[in-house]
Length: 299
Image 1 (cartoon, rainbow, N blue to C red):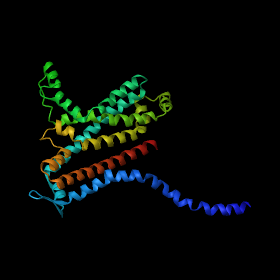
Image 2 (image 1 turned 180 degrees about the horizontal axis):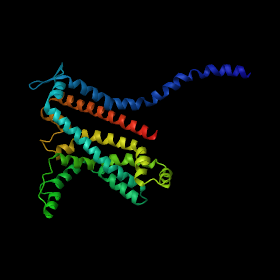
Image 3 (image 1 turned 90 degrees about the vertical axis):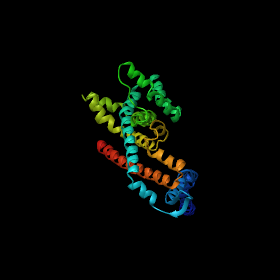
Image 4 (image 1 turned 180 degrees about the vertical axis):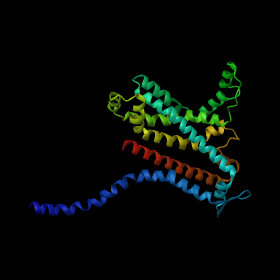
């Protein structure tokens, strides 16, 4: 009886195999469809647009050309804009790491209610529009702003800060810092306090404990925060447009000019996709380097 029951039950279990293997795909199909409609389809249409011919008299023509990419890759004007965008983004990321990682460490060591208060201070800027914050920095850094007034009050000469790269970096650090603090703080929450206590009990200094115990384990948080900050800084538009002025252009402001001022949509699409590819190449390389360092430090 038992062998017959097994023989009867075995065929009935086989049809469930293919349906079970299709279940994850069917469950994820709505999310994937939404992802494709909101991201993949617009990217594909932008890529198609970047290869079309533009005529100043008649507009976009349905003809294939590589002239826009050739202009972006060979013109020194675009080289300077891309270089400015990438180094400002890298500098913003570096400052956010140097400021945000210690801030997250202090936040993780605080007790209630001070931890909640400091966390609210870190997250509060996210509740204010980027445009509003950019206008606020323009008033602070302007010729008659608070910064120059304070410098004149102590006998120092006024400085031209607004419409410079320094103003863009300052505002970007202010906007992007929460995106660095939160991932690092999340990584610190996963650490076992006993490991740090064990290192200190074995006569390791606080600096050695930070360098060899804590820092290697928070590298994933630093990596995540760095990728977010770099990507958002490289594609930022409001802050470079309001604090950089018309002469200090970054890639996002150039794309805006090509789309709305020059009406050269194919060239704007080519510039935007070139920035996307450059960001992907830099971020993937950075991810690979930090992952190797993380695996090496943890053995």
